[in-house]
Image (cartoon, rainbow, N blue to C red):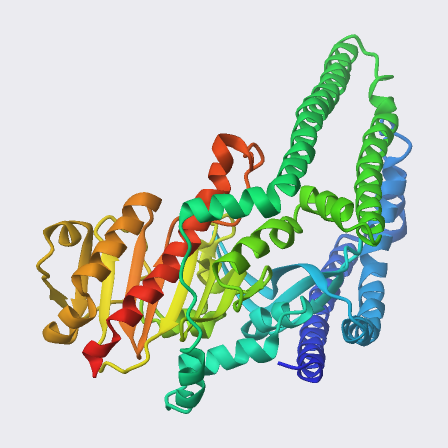
Length: 540
């Protein structure tokens, strides 16, 4: 994907979104006119004076607070004005697209991208809603901007958009994708050159030495900042909650007690209470804005150590400050993209899951070649929302964990699928013949399916099965594995992230145990590549 291609995608989806919005407003206008016509008919049929009826409605009752009629008028005015304001904002969207892409071309990068799906048409049928015309909206923050760019994008291209806007090496990633998913053998010459470079995996002790020599000071400072943040949060949040609950409780008790005595003076102070809570909200937003501004100002300085530590403590830059260096320690030739992940086509190509229009989210993509083998791995969250569903129903969780795909150097014609016996995914789609292997422990842990009994045994060598067992035991993962189309796909439905650091977690506790576990988890996936490459001659 290029900048020009992304520009065309934004404009195309903008025009579609605008068309759907106009259709939606047309439907709403028709319904409003229909209701007004019905009301006018009722006035006429009952000989009611509409002006007098409206005056009584907005005049309020005798004991109503003075502001009630103004609130009703404000709501009606807002309902009339909002569509025009919305249409005006739509007319400004092409300018925002150009502004975003011009900043990207000037060197800016996206630091955060959130996406959500909006359904432009919803047909309610009792407890079941039919949702139609979905539009994916992306909230894009550049260089720690406080205000995002909110733009529509076709969900099919969402993963590529994130990589492009975050400054990832798109050309190198496309080369890896071609190597993984191309049907021909055009990469043979390139493969032979790459195979000359061997990258042995380092031991845990070597990694500990690397941490002490290269990241010790940074990790200590990050933990100090995180500890301070934890303390402040644990002090401020309970105090604010107790204060709000105390004031609200006192107001409620006073209102009930006063009403029982015929005193409504407390109820008349509602605007002051609303003003108070509005002030608290404004202070909260103001503080959030100040933190973002200070973070942006700090990271804009040339002081590498201070800015990196502050940014890492703030959140997203922990990946850049620590995780990127750990990944480069494993293999300096691979690419790490904190916002990157595979898309729906790559997820479905494994053959493990039913073909549906899933919602795909992810991050922390690592891609490249390890000892000549092209691969992609990332964190992935996959959900599915049924068209016929209750409004309160949450989307089904299809997959949540680590996704890994690598290609072999020589082809095999059959497919082999491995499912955990205690797996929970109801969206897997495997209909091949069940295969029984000679490893009893492996068969107790997994069910194996395939189209060729003999080739399945060549693919699942004793060393390969042993490594899969060890990873599953140590990580307590839920592994679904596919060997098909000359690739291996491993999905670990672990329900957690290997890159995330919990609020109460410490990077330095127990001799950097959290980082050591992270290193061993990533190294194990690289080790599978090594193991399969050593056995590649069996497909001669």
